[in-house]
Image 1: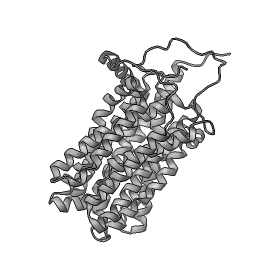
Image 2: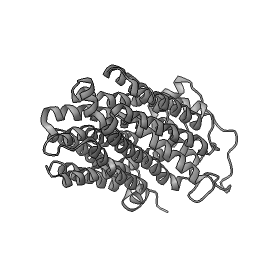
Image 3: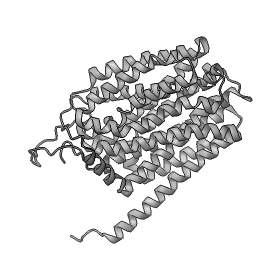
Image 4: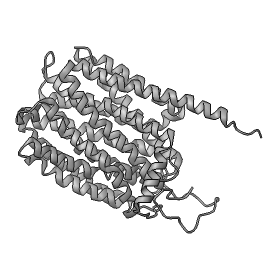
Length: 425
């Protein structure tokens, strides 16, 4: 296949012969470890910054004298802005390069992150978080497009799984660190520490990431971009994958936005530092995301999605107990199911889109973070209206949507097979 198969890219003048060796990276090959570590650190920085206030919402709410749903906008504004800007950012990456855009995005995001601790009001904090989310929009779609171009197809799911694993480590470390730092010095110092960690990740990312060898600059013409997006949205499989990513993220965003409020209330009444440590369960997501390739090889894409949905459902139901070990086990299962489902869905998008990969990935990321923003807001509203059971009900409805879409996809695939049977040999 061409080295840069994107809808917005220009046509390369020469195509290498079929017998030519594949120069893209593979596990054990030159540059693969540096690339994996660089994108892992980019994933760490992205999730650490994006969700830096999530574990601190009770403190933010108390400091500014606002409700849980109002405080949740410090998360929703960041994820919503990312969802809004990820498609335009993907177009810029087609023109200026994946590595260039990812670097610029990190520079702006970490710079804003260093200003967040000084926000004088909840409105200013929400505005800064929105700018930060918009800046981070340059990372997810560009990273998956970079991998699709620079990594051999058989290693793609594993490589994207490692990037997603970096997301889980960033989400976990950000919440654990902010929890303990905030307990001693307040939420402002806590988010400042996350900003400094993100600076270190950004510098290491730039130094480690290999120069792209298979990227071809494309056009920024709106008509080309619009045609590519239209083609992707006309693809039923891609649309199903977008919906699955959004629904999984609705569960995850709702649960982790509200869990801090639940655990500070009776019967748990846990201190902020202990609540932050509970996010160590993100390590489970690191494992489940990085092993997504093996899971798909054994169960197939749909089988993996069924398993991820079932695992998430079991976790939601267990979390209803007023017994802390069962709540923790529930969070472990929710996290494992979510990250496995996300890794499978996002890698399937890159595999399905044979052209315009950056735009295909951008549409997935947009849907994914819309799901996060909606889940964070509705999760808080459901918690306010019906307690933890309300948030769990929202999550169960989202998982039901995932399973329904996957079942429909299975039926659609069988129907397509009957209409277009393979020719006899």
